[in-house]
Image (cartoon, rainbow, N blue to C red; front, side, top):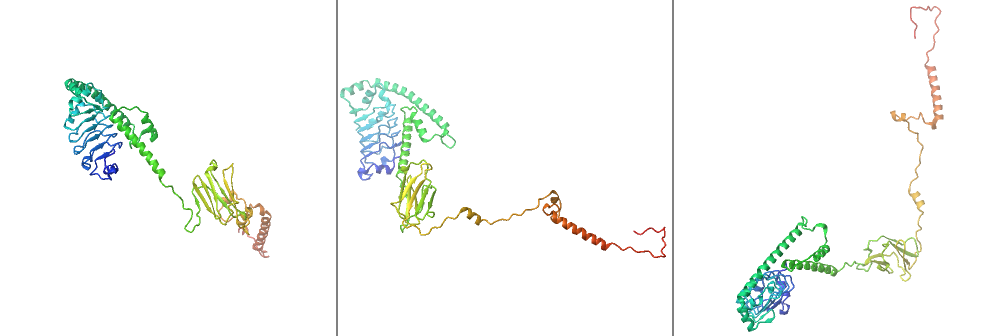
Length: 444
């Protein structure tokens, strides 16, 4: 809801150099104001107050404007004429296109003795039979109604038909009250349906974005009611704020990268974050820059600037800048782009070719030198018996040592035979007088 603030009044009083106390005229139209407030206390010297094309639903807080002569409340949501008795100097009142249905409210304007012109065009009661006669007879001080002058004969006829006109106006108001009641109920039902379609956090179901919701709103049917006018005004305000946000974002200064330091030395910058390869070692006569530009990017979005000490490539407004190890000839530099991969190749001849340049080593040789040579020895095959035994490794079944093992076994056998010969006891020869006793068992 837009409210009347001191800032708004000062903004609208530029013709009076921003002074509010001495202000005699102010225009507050098309501000989506929904309530009249503060004006009778801040601007008591007002003579002209324009509040047309807002969302004001009630006439209030105007009783202290004793000098006010012209009040414009056209195109608002007012339904009752009230609270205007304190405007002692009021001469002209404009209530065009409001929602006033009870014409009996104009009786309160009898207190405004200086009221000469009243405009009520576009209100529901203007369709009642006897409307003009009733107003002319009720307000004898009026000289003009709905921009039409009131003649003396018309006033006499209106006074004669006042009773009949009052009955017609009352019947017309009863019919309008029924229609208005149906409008309120229909709006309440639509609001309840809309609220039920909201999620728990207040967001709309279905994930509709602002554009879809706005399109759905403008395609829906609407009626000429205060509620629909408020909804339309709020939707317009939402769209206007959205456009203003976009304009503010567009007006924000874009980030400009710092390309050089205080000494004038260029920085290395890669705003587009594209892969590149700067080759300044393989060739003594030139420097080659290979940039992996997006394959399907149009060449019109590319701009190359080669300087003696640096190269700058602009890709869709984003800068890739690289410093060079040596000065290059800008006028002899060339730029080519691959039609297959989209890569951009910038070839920049050196100003002074290098006298000596390191020769790239052979990759195969380098790889063999860097890796130590490993010797591989044949090992005996593991057997099932080997895993089941505990103890030192045995080479009984090593077929590579069959000959050696045979020699060892032969030597072992010879040693064992020698040991047996040494350890074998000597046979003793019995004496001549030895008598063998058969009862004695032989010695083993």
